[in-house]
Image 1 (spheres, rainbow, N blue to C red):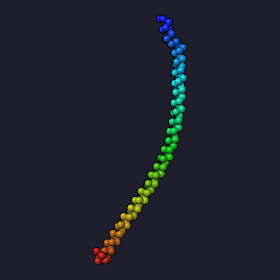
Image 2 (cartoon, rainbow, N blue to C red):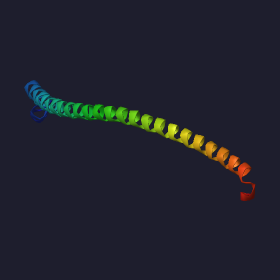
Image 3 (cartoon, helix red, strand yellow):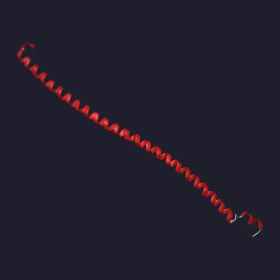
Length: 101
């Protein structure tokens, strides 16, 4: 082994310094990821709140649509009753006024 080979090989101190530098760099990256994760968690929380509000609105909308459907069904039923009454009256009118045929 000559003197040039000894100078180019890193010493244990150099390797440990590089490991420490890498560790510090990784620690800083992880800290940044933690901050990003906390920010994302906050945004997800806000989205959850908004979805809950929408869920309540959809429940209210479902209730209103059910009421509308109920009213529509009753109206249709009453309309059909009127139609039957008109047909019965028309038939009676035809019996009373045969010339109207």
